[in-house]
Length: 427
Ligand SMILES: Cc1ncc(COP(=O)(O)O)c(C=O)c1O
Image (cartoon, rainbow, N blue to C red; front, top):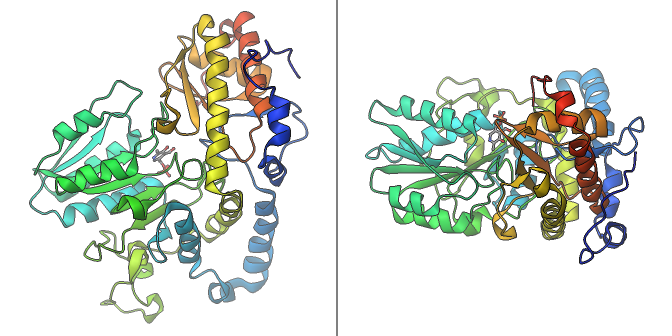
């Protein structure tokens, strides 16, 4: 399947040299790679991360032994506090303290809980600020939270140029009506990455709380919620954390805000669920934001991918991620722009996450041709974007060159014509 690549421009170091010198190279073997698809290049780890080998072993332990043999006894043998223990492990990755992070429902539901809680402690303010780079589910959820808070509440969506976060627009929109600023740390389309501390400080100066969505940054971009003095955050575990499809999201609640209350109070967020008390007190820390029985099977499988990220270390992961996206951009400028692609991600690496978006008038068809003819998997975001995710735990520099070479081949051979009619449910 190897394609004779157009070859990197002379000022780029050969990919095999970089791969040989890569201190993270060994982590690639920690993941399952199907042997029926040699030459497969998976560039969608920003959507669904790969399967860690350790998760395969753990899945059979959790299903066969813990569920199959131990049955109800497993609740006392590690299931009960799993969302809390995994939250504490995750806290180390995002600059949070013990008790500030739990695994809960999906990102959207966690966002709802966090947003309603934030509005509850700013009763005299009626606005939630966000931007048009945010994920649609987030904006839908924020609107639902605003509706729940009252008829005067509204979500103000600040416009951007489609690539860069609208800092000036946010600053101009912030005022004493703003209860909450909620943004995606890394934008799902362009990969724009906000400065957590700057934006949080700006919102605090205006008296607002801040709620970050870390779905596209956790495991790919260093995060220090404590240093940023962030109030609330959520994020998914199935992208760069490789937790598996539908794995539970996490919720961070700053220990400085004990007055925040979970709008969906339930027994798992009480101080003793098995007291079976209608009037139970709330649990301490982020645990009070739990509601019902955790999804034990999928929660358990978050551990292996999280451990791999912790073992690799965020500094090394970030350095490799930047090198991968920089290389892709150099090759895109060299070979893809003349073929109708346009870079729609920030050029400044400090302001970019671990994926790159390219626009193309036939993005969907080109993406389908790449998947079906060339075993390269990006994803498509309508109307005209292809996203290429560079998960630094398992993507090689050679994969970057190979992907670009195959894109050249697809476009030059008229691949878009062959796949124009394809319309998969999940693009
Ligand atoms: C930035 C962002 N936020 C929220 C979501 C929605 O997550 P969930 O389906 O877990 O609610 C996604 C899904 O991809 C996302 O990318």
